[in-house]
Amino acid sequence: MTITIYHNPSCGTSRNTRAMIRRSGEEPEVVEYLKAPPTRERLVWLLKAMKMKPCELLRRKGTPYDELGLDDAKWTDEQLIGLMLEHPILINRPIVVTAKGVRLCRPSEVVLEILPNADIGTFTKEDGQVVHGRKRPGD
Image (cartoon, rainbow, N blue to C red; front, top):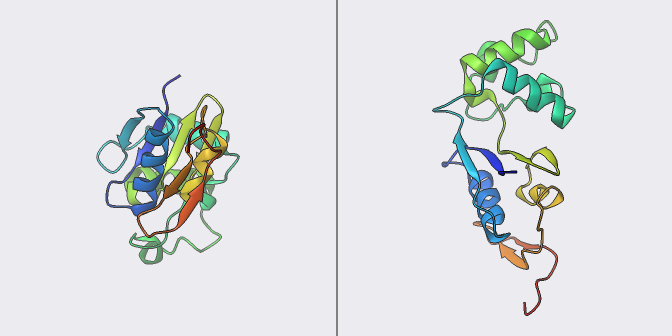
């Protein structure tokens, strides 16, 4: 199964996650979801696979979250999904899909839970934080 990452190249967490996937020996299918948003059906599937409610996947920073008043309890799940499709920047990222599961990878090292090969050794994130995957022989 191909690993898919719903990616925003301007997001450091997303870039770190993609780099960890590559470090594991896989080349992910990269979906730049701001340019190619998921379909309603796919977004619903991703939410179900992550066992998340739409309100839990909303991103606030750098989005129209406050302008739209999305912290108001009046919004239904269907309405929130519709708003995420209308404004894909509201979808938190990165979301990674592998044969082992689907996760919102915040922080980026969450991806290690679902990689077929999490033996990435020591990985340094863009901000200098060090992540220790399972050691590879010779590391």
